[in-house]
Length: 337
Ligand code: PMP
Image 1 (cartoon, rainbow, N blue to C red):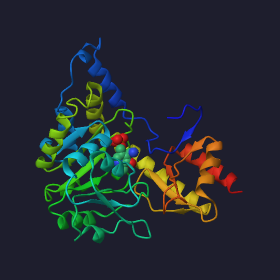
Image 2: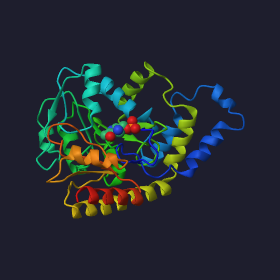
Image 3: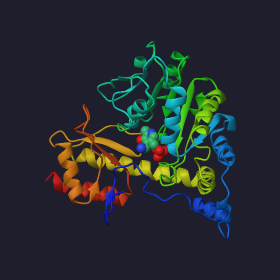
């Protein structure tokens, strides 16, 4: 978090809107009058939160695992479910933490190139021996969405592998694969409250899948930290899950702004990949992406540039408020002359 005043921060896919007011009320209620309850350890199983997630997604609490942000959930997934003799598969352009976990836990991997239009081709994940499969849907940093039937096809074709779908951004335009977990015992779906529920600062993520997968995650988690979620996070997260109306309104606002910004940037000559996330991935055919990012930074607007093969001419721009996105468009209009 840069310590610069009046910064327009469109680089880490945070939600521009605050969390539901019910989150703060729940945290205050949990604290009580004298915060004495903070003397006591929290529920190691966060049963209230698992129940709230189970209600929201119409699964049983035994199908739910919770962790300190989905990054922690993913770390346990790599250790508990993806470490095998055969390399795991993930896209060549994807969430940058996957190879980091592989390095930490000694998991072999093979990257699978995205198609020329930056989509995942499900056939590339079918009929290839592997120790597991993981990808975000929508993918990051492209924002491109894979249809549910393609995910089903991948789960079906790999009955002996854990197929992990990282749905950090799914609430901004995708359909969750949680509805498939009863049919595919190898499918694990990972979510976060950091994006669509505006709680990146609170650190809560979860996974939904067959109870056997959840049990494996619980064993790794309990060998690492029995209390990854504190009392305030559990109380706040329950309230966030239960305020479906507020959640829906924020998601719709972000989606509407995304569509306006995509059209505005297309008007400025950018190529904008179709996005189902709270960010867009764009490139300008005549202007260097790193230079554009630098010019924006000089105007106190930060966006994300990846110095990586295939995507070094793209910028990933988080959807902010309408005002922030207007400031971005105005700045780009100036920069592009
Ligand atoms: N998965 C993906 C694809 C992400 O982009 C992020 C956010 N950087 C995460 C997981 C982790 O989010 P968090 O730890 O905040 O839940």
